[in-house]
Image (cartoon, rainbow, N blue to C red; front, side, top):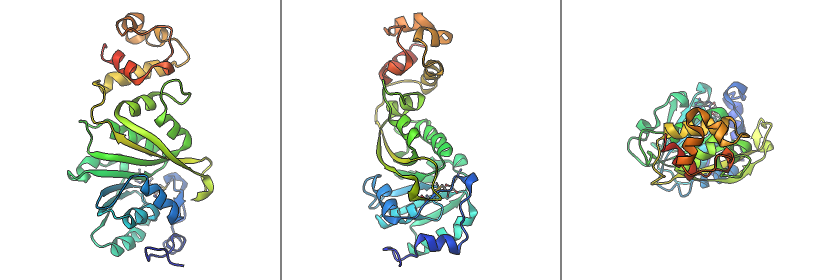
Length: 275
Ligand code: SAM
C-alpha cells in the first residue's frame, strides 16, 4: 500500500536501494510514517519553514517534514547509498529538498542556513548528536542562527539534557542546556519502532534558545562544570580547588560543603563570572 504522500512504503525503498542498516553509521531507521510525523510535529508548525535535517537515511523523517509543509529542507547525509532514495523524494517535492552528502560533524550549519531562520531536526547516532548539540549551543554569537532543535537521543542522554539541580542526571550537559535553552523531552520511542531495533529506549528532545541567557563566558562555565562534576561526589571546596576552591566559593557566596549537583545554573554562572 502506498503511503499518504504517494511515495512508496519505506520498506520497499530500503529493499529496492539495498539500504541494509550499517552499525558503524548508527543506522536504526524509523519506517512508520505516523511516528516520523509525530517527531516532526514536535518542532512546532513547519508550514513555510526552512529545516535542516541531519542524517535523513532513507528519508522517513524527511518525508514527514515535507508533508507537514516545510518550504525547504536541507538534509546532510553521510551514507552515499541513501542518496538515490532521497533523490526520489526530491523529485516528488520539486525545489523543496536539497541533499548534501557529507559528515555533519564537519558541516558549517550557519553557512548552510544562508541567513534564514532554521529549525534543526535530527535522528542521529547518539555520540554524533551530543557533539552537534554542544556545537549548536556554543556558536560565536547568541541568539544562535537556529530557532529550535528537535533531536532524538537515547533516553538517558535526553534525561541529562533536560536535567536541573538535585536530579541524578544533572551534569555538564544539563548546565549548558539549562543556561542557553528551554529544553524538554517530548515523548519516548521504544526500540521495536526502529529497524533494526537499538538496545535502549529513545526519546525526542526539543530545545529553544533563551534569547538573553545569564551573562557568562562559555569557556569559564565549562571550566567550572568540568571541575565540579569531574568529582561530583566531593564537596565543592575540594572539587573546585584547582580553580580557586574555598576563596572562590566565598566570593560567590556559596557554601563550600555543597556538591556540584545541588548548584543551579545561576550559581554555576556566578562562580564562572568570578574566575
Ligand atoms: N533519519 C532516519 C530515520 O529517522 O529513520 C535515519 C536515522 S539513523 C538513526 C542515523 C542516520 O544518520 C543514518 O542515515 C546515518 O547514515 C546518518 N549519519 C551517521 N553519522 C552521520 C554524520 N556524521 N553525518 C551525517 N549523517 C550521519
